[in-house]
Image (cartoon, rainbow, N blue to C red):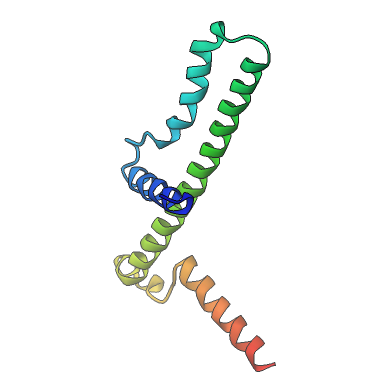
Length: 122
């Protein structure tokens, strides 16, 4: 198993876990090495303890950064999905003056397409 495929497997598992929010455990897994170091710290002395704490804290920070990155990607996907649902159905449940409105995602997409078309013509 290569590093890329292992990371892909971890990311897939994490995405599945984040979709199950608030029953997620992925954000807690970064604490396991620090808890382990806390339990075994009385048996370790000197540079070995320092190396253990450095590795466990580094793993925790990297894992937390990965969880935050995946959670932000999930939140963005969900926001786009809900904006599209608003554009399809939600705005028609409001009073008639809002029927011509559009979601922020659709407005940003329209502006981005307009900008790209004007830069292509130059």
